[in-house]
Image (tube, rainbow, N blue to C red; front, top):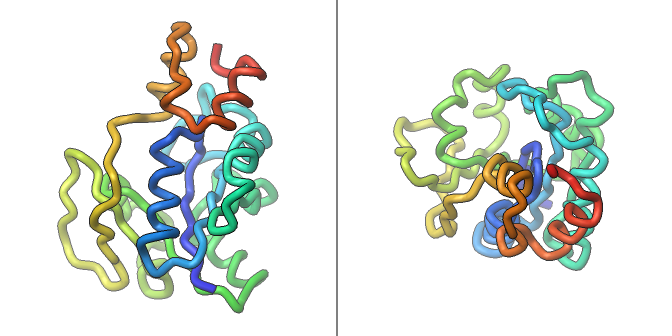
Length: 189
């Protein structure tokens, strides 16, 4: 099975995340998209990061009815901060029958050369890049596939967190079940 890996802290999951994942599952050659919840991104600080199990549960609740979307906690048992190459190696060891590809925005592609063992990633895995407003996709790399047509949304998890903290109604910016879980648990207030 060809599986796209959508890495992120998902702090919290918002409609943009769900749109990207479902678009990749429906309109690319990926058979399934796996949200890989990262306990800590090595390029980001851990400030205001919701507990990893809550972030996992929010996604699990939101995608439970879609067989083309899944969520993984594989990085929870790995050394932190988590590095993509280490996760890829572990996934391939545990499921050698699968082919894995990374899903990333054009903004992340600009910093890709800073990733641990990025050359090894490009040599052994495909990278599916979706456009992001304000970020040009430049350079040519082996195994980089530009996926056109992915809806672009000017929304971020930090905007969601700050809006909740300010008491704003962001219920339309998060998928329904994700919002319900976040609201009931009083997260980010």
